[in-house]
Length: 250
Image (cartoon, rainbow, N blue to C red; front, side, top):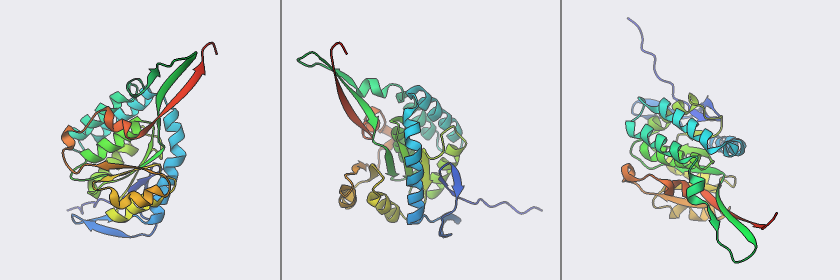
């Protein structure tokens, strides 16, 4: 008779499986899960900041390949709708610029172009239930060239998703997943000045003041209806539109 091997859950920061630096855990469905501290959140943000420029510099086609690989790794571990959603956003990676960008008509001897650029580091505090809200927010942000620090209200779902990301081709630090107390993680991300955008479940108003201190973009996530929430509109929430002008003939 053998003894069963119990699962040891760990967060994912910079492509590595880590415990909380405090050593603290909490119980969820009879399992011990890491309780992220402020330092854990800082470490995740630092990893995302370092990884984001390299991720943004990849061609959209290559980002799409990597998101598709993530969908392969998720398949069979989480609900099939999650891998479907990842494939959906893999397809947007090399098309978002054409849909969100434009050649602007101007009255003068100039060319004017608008195109999307990532906002940078995105904190996503996903609503529940299930993994679909988490996957939608993460995939849309990654498709736009951002790096992500993510939190799921169901820690087992979040860490299953995180484990799949490590075995995909995502570069270390592009996706970091932490677990712990909802309000604590959301507050740490809202106050962190190196986070460029925070997406939180409605109502987002409690985090508005902390976000305004660093001019952080605040995105409100609905709490239900995620089966029908997909498309380029979510990528648009995590990009900025940059417009450049060039004189004709240069």
